[in-house]
Image (cartoon, rainbow, N blue to C red):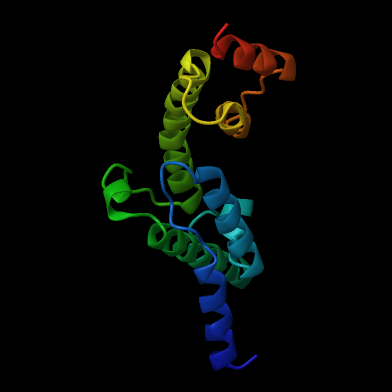
Length: 170
């Protein structure tokens, strides 16, 4: 493969990586991992950091360390490229791409808990205000339930039906 087509392939892969925001961490992570795998630079995620080579290290060990180090560096660059500046300041700098991703994951795990709490509270307290279509009100409640499901809080369908009935006027 020549360098022009290689560069265009890299650019095409990078353009598929979403910019990370408060609501798309799972999709962002999945896309980043797919792109890194397709570009065959995900070694830093698949393997632990090998020991630094010494004068006594074999040529293969030195080469493997160089491959791992390049993979780690490229993974970090790609992840940092897709993170907005306001997030970068809140994430401590890590030497390995795997540790960097874990740090981001911790930050978003807290956000998901807060978002789950907010959505659940809204679902429980939402009332039909005799404005607009009842169908739209029911669809809004269903949408809240699907957002909760995306955050790994699965509510039984019977519960959602009861919540909808309780939200309607007598």
